[in-house]
Length: 390
Ligand code: FAD
Ligand code: DHB
Image 1 (cartoon, rainbow, N blue to C red):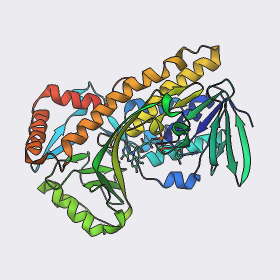
Image 2 (image 1 turned 135 degrees about the vertical axis):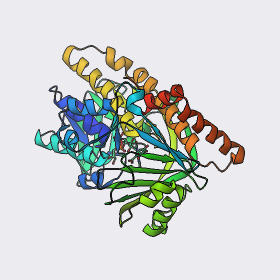
Image 3 (image 1 turned 60 degrees about the vertical axis):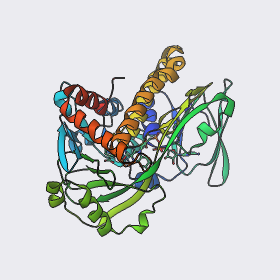
Image 4 (image 1 turned 45 degrees about the vertical axis):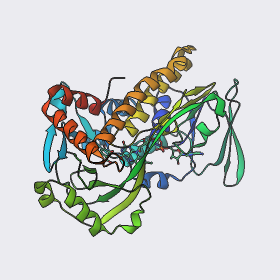
């Protein structure tokens, strides 16, 4: 088999790239290790920056998002038992974010891909990359136990943190930067109305909590927990009691509980690989970087990488210019590091860190007080939260 671009991974990054290329007449094949149902079963992010929404529109995959996505013009910070609103729209000249689940975005992209007849190989095993330092990259894989070969001009490594693409690069050619946090997030999804019409980020003596949502009838809640925590050891009742205990009295009173649809633990990590290009192999999304989820940047950062990469590939295939491809790594990394900084800062300000003690906690509270009382500080948070410019 031959194609122009081999895309490894059918997460949001790979699917979005496939659609943007297809719309410009560029052929791509996506190789995905898992089944489509497995990919759709992973509950992950839920908050889209307007740049991500624009990119989905460019991909022609924004119909349902426009109808069902919830625009949010503010978020709430809760500390010392009181809630404070950050007016994102007023502080950013009218910008907002859109609540729309990663699962829904992935479904829309998968449906668009199958409607246009573009090829995705699900359950592609043993993906192996070769020749990307030369002019004729080849991807080998197994489908139903039979060896297959995909020849291409470029490889887009969109296969997440544990994928094969980054691991295919010789160690001496890549530098990585990492910080692992000593805790995780226990998430719960339930078909109950959200406790509030906007998100609430909570700094509490017992640990961070987040009240988010997927729709007006589906809530997503998170609790800071030990990194090694197992979701199965938490009953739904224990989760609800712990969450209630971390909220302000009014929200605690209003919290509607119900049976969980899903519970899982995500460990928190900051990670960046440099550079993002190795000959004809490009890394994008979680394959290249991880942010801790506080601030909802992971999925949005995957989308901004894909914006730069798709534009570069389109420029190359339409006129032969390699300028965009040559600039991809530095353009993407400049935005990635700013999102890394924001996610690290939000994480540091809102979580309980075992090592910092009472002094560190007082500093967090002072920072939060400053944030909600200074327009300059609130505007900085708002500008980052709605998404920095491309
Ligand atoms: P992925 O979504 O990871 O997609 C990569 C794809 O590549 C996967 O489908 C995988 O199966 C496939 N793959 C892997 N290896 C191979 C291989 N060898 N061959 C072929 N295919 C392969 N972000 C937020 O903003 N908010 C959140 O609340 C949030 N929660 C998260 C919870 C969890 C448990 C995780 C893991 C991430 C979370 N994120 C969150 C981050 C966000 O979901 C990611 O940033 C986003 O999914 C990145 O998209 P991606 O396409 O780059 O990678
Ligand atoms: C969600 C996750 C986040 O990390 C965040 O900052 C906001 C919302 C969510 O899953 O809904």
